[in-house]
Length: 470
Image (cartoon, rainbow, N blue to C red):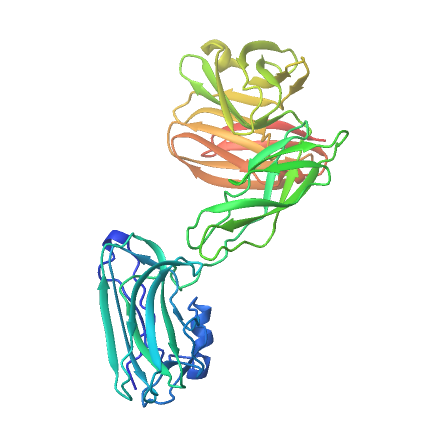
């Protein structure tokens, strides 16, 4: 039995593929019997029109043998999978015949390059076969000055007269497979959740999380439009959604698929894109404060999207009841990407060290409509351990958010107590010097009522904040 040589795959650039080679001996291999081998090779994108794999007329394991019919125009032959071919290629194989040619009969082989769709690109060689019987002949030839590219090698067997059959074995081509397993693999499209704007329009890119194992370029195609409006999709996966007049729902959906530009071209299963439309014109997150020496409080916040947003007015209070505008920041207007803002409030050291500072953001749109954020409470300590602590409901998650600004590494303990003084939530963490943020996950789910947030650092500095859950 001949030594089993499976498809050898070497991945390299076309210019560097000097030693890469595809070898197929048409033998059995682990888990694949001789009777199953043709199907196995076809599943790896070999095409074998009118050829069968058999041990007939030889003592060796497997040879490719055609039927007994012969014509000068038949397609009978061997197509390799798609190959990365450089500017030269060496092709070799063994062949023999089962019986002598009858007088006047002929057999010949053509060596052809085709494109990945089996369309002939160039005939490299055509040779007449000598009428030898049971003697193995070897074909081995190198072809120079080729145009590098993605091709298949096609051995086309033709002839006239008689029933003499050829058997082909030990095919070697000095080029690597274009695809690792011989065949292109289907891309995968993944479902998306994309945030729209309060006016129920939306834009986005659906292919960001889609993938293709062969790294082929992907094109996106709309399959089912939204019943609530019109989706316009471009090949790169970008889209726009325009709602139907009067649509006021919170969400809608559409489906799409991606197709690669591989050989042969394959497409994904359909994926669903869900568009969700917020009621608020601005998505606010990460509202926090940091104290700078000299009486300056630096406020930072971010938006996930903005719609007709004109400005932010930063309001400050020292008692939580009377407010005045500390400053104004111009907004982005319209945005579907994260924007980060900051404002330095020159409150003064005397004011900062005496009382808690209350901050809130007033968002003003282009027509003067306003929306006000929840409170941010800032307490300045300026002790050897603690510089500042601040508390606010996280605007995005609605959970309680605590920011500590420490002068040294410390243990921070957070507790939420109900009106009876019982602990309903607690969290302990070690924080390094500098600013650290802690989220009391799940505090949004507290039952309505009065609570107290207790934040302590090293069981010494403490901040108590009254909370009302509505």
